[in-house]
Length: 88
Image (cartoon, rainbow, N blue to C red; front, side, top):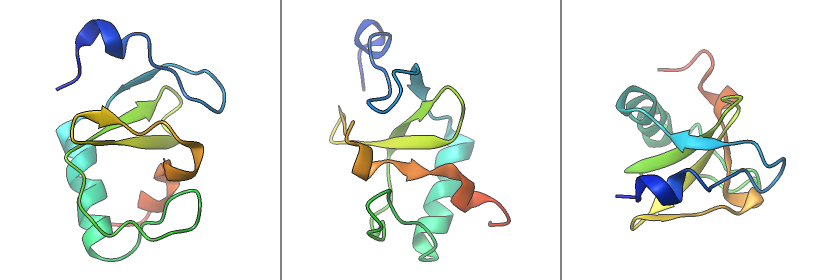
């Protein structure tokens, strides 16, 4: 997984807000919504594959996926967490 020291240096590319690892409960909820076809990224593309991990912005509005232990800190790949409202 991501080195703790490295994680402390990561910030949101949109507003420089700190990021932290998503907990298992959030990841499970997100993956259920992905499986149901209800999640798209900020670019508007559907997220089709489940995620093993993610980084959540401090304000809990966005999640950046972690793919093969590499954080994908591209604004268009972020997932708005308000898509989970009313779901699963």
